[in-house]
Image (cartoon, rainbow, N blue to C red; front, top):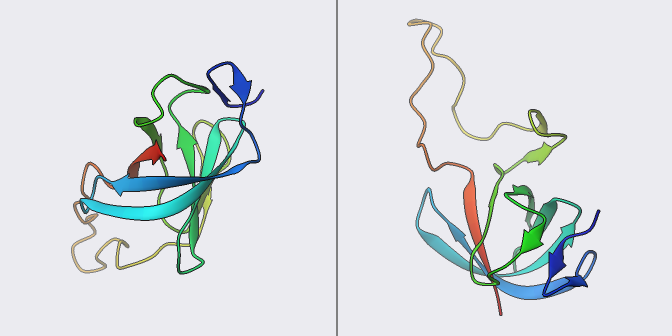
Length: 112
């Protein structure tokens, strides 16, 4: 199944876009490529992130939302694999997880 916009399959095409990261409020000029229910966001510094889209049919090219954390690749609806960045491990002295931002991993793409 392919990602569709205006009834057209847009899988595999690198399109110019802006990506908004909810956790930081940062807006990035990027290129995005869609594949099935995923989007890979390509940044100018050659980094990239693959996110899982909320839906396969894009109805608003300025509001394409998805979820993905840097260093993680979504495998299916429940699991992702990859590297962990930062100090997000449980504190060994307290045995408790650190609080994370509820918007961490949420992205909005706007096609140009």
